[in-house]
Amino acid sequence: MSLEDLAIVYLEGHQGVWGTRFHEWVALSQFLAHLPWEVQEIHQLNERHLTAYRAWLSVQPVEPYSAYSRYLRIRVFLRWAFRKGHLLLPLGQDHDEKRPANRWISRYSQEQMKILLEQPPQTLQGRADAFALELLYGTGLRRQEASRLRLTDLTDIGVWIRLGKGGKDRLVPTGPFLRGQIAQYLDKIRPQLSPNSEQSHLLLSLDGERLKMPSLAYRFGVYARQAGLPVRGLHSLRYAYATHLLEGGARMEDVQRLLGHASIRTTQIYTQVTPLELIRAVRKAHPRRRTARAR
Image (tube, rainbow, N blue to C red):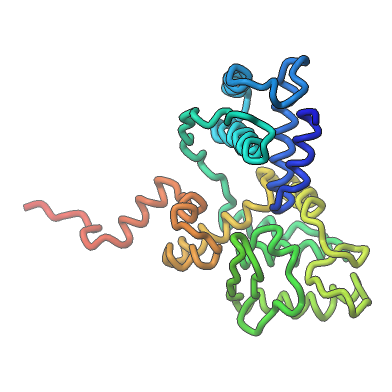
């Protein structure tokens, strides 16, 4: 079996959300394209090829964390190949790869979110998009979690996430504003998208099928440019949800549970605050915040 065919077998058997599988495909495609043409079989691979690829990655115009992530995906693929008996010896497992510091996560401010959510037009598509964006920002759901939501997952106090990341269920509360948006969507917008009562997904496209997040992400970029704001992915709504909760006084542990994070360290990455915000927090909350009087 050729190296390319083996990569296809690996990708087809990979269990994960669409976005993860896409990044696996990108990393493997880039790695295979970088190999010398004579390397056609996996047994022809050696440590020199990995070292050369890692050196090439280090000078590419990508974030250090992105380069680290791509190389890590290659190591996972090679570990799988070794376990499956396609490699006699493990490759790349002795490399001491230090995880780079996470880049500053750029997220929208509260004022920017207000402007952004006003951009969808008053067409059926625009109204459906406006609700989907309100839902993502109002719950902090992952894209695929929102896409998989069904009508039966709605409750009077929030939405149930069934088998989220890590196979865990969680209840995400919704405030009065979002509950009103949900009621309006179910009453006036969704019936126009799908008169079919058998369709159980909450978020739908114009053809009445389950909403595909890449198409929503594209229109989200259009709305951001229209508002004169930086174009960011849908995941930025999850960052904004978490950060704005903290700015409103929520505890980090509560935000962790709402996001469905296994580790609070991940939540801390999501909710980075600016140095100015930290200064304001200290001045507001510390008992010695007032300037001491001269003695």
